[in-house]
Image 1 (tube, one colour):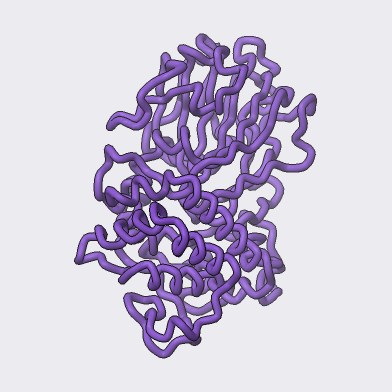
Image 2 (cartoon, helix red, strand yellow):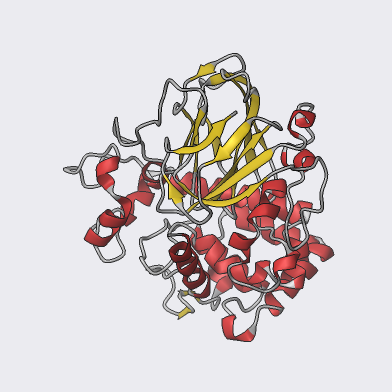
Amino acid sequence: MYQMLKKYFLVTVTVLFLFGCTSAPHKTNGFPSASGITNTKFQPVILELKKLIDEDPVVRMYLTQMIEQIPQRHKNLKDVEDLLYKLNELLKHAPEYNPTRFAGTPLSEMLVWTMSTPAGFAAYRNEKINAMIKNYLIAWSEFLNSEKSLYVINDSKNGWKSKEAQVKLNMNDYQHNPKDEYWGFKSWNDFFARKLVKGARPIAEPDNNKIIVSACDSTTYDISKNVQKYNKFWIKSQPYSLNDMLANDELVDEFVNGDVYQAFLNPFNYHRWHSPVSGTIKKAFVKEGLYFSQANSEGVDPSAQEKSQGYLVHVQTRALFFIKADDITIGLMCFMPVGMVEVSSCIINDNIKPGYHVKKGEELGYFQFGGSTHCLIFRPGAIKEFTTETDKFYKVGEHIATAN
């Protein structure tokens, strides 16, 4: 399964997302061309970005260089002006279905070759550029939260109601109205964060506190033991560095020499999170971070974002749930969902507050936009064994570890 996802990713990032744009007569590489850009009505966030580029020489240098450094055979952007035009167009488009690549990531498909250039590594860690990406994602989210974004829920070849898409999505697992034109969803984001029908994800031994379950529909990426407080997370092996992962939180020392379990979600997966244990919420908050950064150690590689998952959990936007498990051996543990690329919206459910008791398998929150990753972090001595296999897919509620 994991190898299949990797194949999808490799195809994804080498083929541009095709949009049915009617606002411009000429297209280049699947996007409207930059010709006639002076007559384009830019959205406010694009005008804001243009102003930053015009006024800040370092920002202009990074963005210009990262486009120039795209390998020629993958050249999908001409220059900064072309980038602005295409970003403007994307604000009016929702992700379509396409079985040959990752769905839900049109922005990352456009930017993927810039991310692994020398200038791109620097650009996506620049505070001003990162702040503008956040503003852009907020603006795009306004469209994806609107009824206008529902146009992709149709039965055409690239529609989410096509027979092929429905098989891949397994819509019988989700709450929807099959008689409604848009399945009863109010927007693209409403569809993407769709809820399960009762019983679709049975919880393994719900009354046995020794059994830890998968918090997400996801594929196991890594299991690491004896994790240190500080480590060089940016090097090739991407070792976990707890203080950086946990945002310098005062509770970090609880987990030194403990275990980390990490697993990956693709855009076709269910994107809501569920508690892996029964216990009491001690803290739950979102840590803002980067959006399109990836590890330099992976070099110029279209799959470098997926290969950078160890690095990403230290720097990307993420939510942190500190839960005091009912099982005293587990004690305090942390669940950390992490956004990848534009999957920056980590939404914590309103009822998840300090002092609230969650049952194993209870919903905690959800992602928006596309693929993502997550970690479960345990104290030393808490875990007897992990029952998962690397590269294997597990649904929410499946047994993944047993406590001592």
